[in-house]
Amino acid sequence: MTAHSPVQLRPPERILARDLQPATAVTVEGFVHRRRKLASVIFVIIRDRTGLIQVVITEDREQAEQLGEETVIRATGRAVANPQAPGGVELVDPEIEILGRPAGPPPLELWRPELKTGLPTLLDHAALTWRHPSRQLTWRLAAAAVRGFRGALDDQGFTEIATPKLVAGATESGANVFAVDYFGRTGYLAQSPQFYKQIMVGVFERVYEVGPVFRAEPHDTVRHLAQYTSLDAELGFIHDHHDVIMVLREVISRMIAAAGAVPGAVDSGIDLPVVPEQFPVLHFADALRLVGAAEDEPDLAPEHERRLGEWAKTEHGSDFLVVQGYPAVKRPFYTHPQPDDQRWTNSFDLIFRGTELVTGGQRLHRLEDYQAALAARGEDPAPYAEYLATFGYGMPPHGGFAIGLERFVAQLTGTANVREVTLFPRDLHRLTP
Image 1 (tube, rainbow, N blue to C red):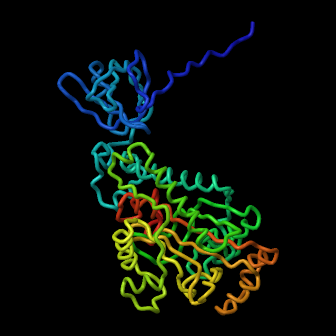
Image 2 (image 1 turned 90 degrees about the vertical axis):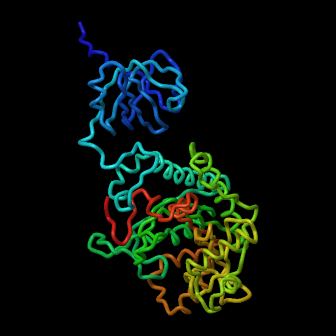
Image 3 (image 1 turned 180 degrees about the vertical axis):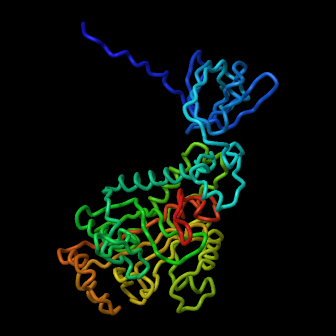
């Protein structure tokens, strides 16, 4: 006779909160969100990734009283209609199995509608605070926005790429890079995928990337991070930066539509902007005059951006404004100059509700123009030798843009500090959790 291993019986298939319907026997799993004890009944609210489920316990109350918040359980019972229960259905006569116990009471009450705690506590306990439904919604919006970004570009013939985050030198002609020991040599964390996405335009013509970037800039503001998620795109065979803006407009529209389709987004009160058919556009010189800044100012201050956002809303009914023609002295060496006046460039920023969200523009594409641009700035071309070699093989006119994901979500949700919408923010002071 041949010995047979005993058959392992799997537990019944799990039903999620969003799919719960009246039935004779269902199994739900999740975290104990809250427990309410009455004279003859205990209500245990279970939280899963889609919502809340009310479990009604009249028997075995002793076990129920031991179910502390965040205990992970499996409950099997009858699902019956109850208009007062979350989702209109509750579980009765349950059999409960404890899958995991917390070490102790959680330091925060996740069952409350809002997490009323200071930012340091919110970030220090990120492993717990991200379980709160409102916090979960924030990152679901971010994830949906990334899907919208990818979908918009996929539909326009772009290819997704993945570029190195360990590089041999600075990308943006600056010194604000994080140095690392790379097998005895000095390497750096990439400030952006700029050089690589330009190189790949010579291969695929249209490319994009979603990935982290690192900026060792001593900013300690509500809008800056040392590491953030950058949504980059680069496209070839353009006429000028206006072709880039047209692609950007479609991308932003799809990102907002995707975020708005997230369950709970509309009910949460998020003010979803309407993306106009064309972004209103203002030249940098005109923007300076509009905000009363000196005509030789090389950049827009946050206060300038705020006032320009108000102007765009008042004059154009738009939450968006493109400011184009930034001064050449402010933009990287690879930026294409404005043909009729080389003090300015074919570059732009997209201001969203008074905050700069996107930087983009047309790039140089001829080798001799790169060599001249570096010489004009007094920069040694040697560190860029491999990058410059790309343009010696012929490159089409091209341009692109980069969107800061966390800043996009902060502006979309009206969040004052970008750290609140970042999973595990890194800034001047924080390397944990």
